[in-house]
Length: 150
Image (cartoon, rainbow, N blue to C red):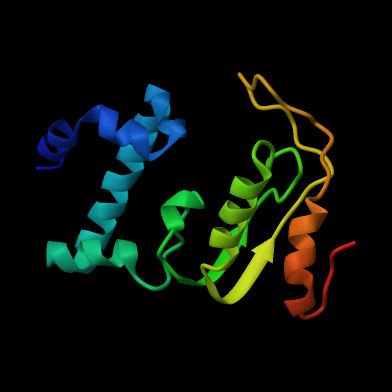
C-alpha cells in the first residue's frame, strides 16, 4: 500500500516538500526511515490510523519554512540563522516573513545566529562570516526573560 501511495503522489510532489529531496538518495533515505517508523508505531498500535496519528501528536517536532507556517500556532518556535546574510533582498518582505515566524509562538520563542557558517556544497552565494540581524532581535528582546543577545 505504501508503494502505491508513493506512485500516486509522485516524486515531483515529494521534491516540492523540501529541496533536500531533490537528491534521490536523500529522498530514498527519508522514505526508508518513514516506513521503518510506521512499522514501529504499528507494532505499538495495531490500529493503523491511530498509529499514523502519532506522527502529528503534540510532542512531534515540525520543521517548516516561515511561509508554510502561516496561519498555524505552536507552543514553541525556533527560528534559526536570524542573520543579515539570510535576510537579504526586499526589506519589507523580509520583515513581514520574520513577523510571521515569531508570531507563530504561543509560549516560547528561540532565535539563533552564528558568527560563522560553513559553505554548503553547491552554494552560489555564501558568506562564511555572519552577523546577527540586530533589527529583528531588537523587536523581540524587550519581551525575552534573561536576554542573552549581545
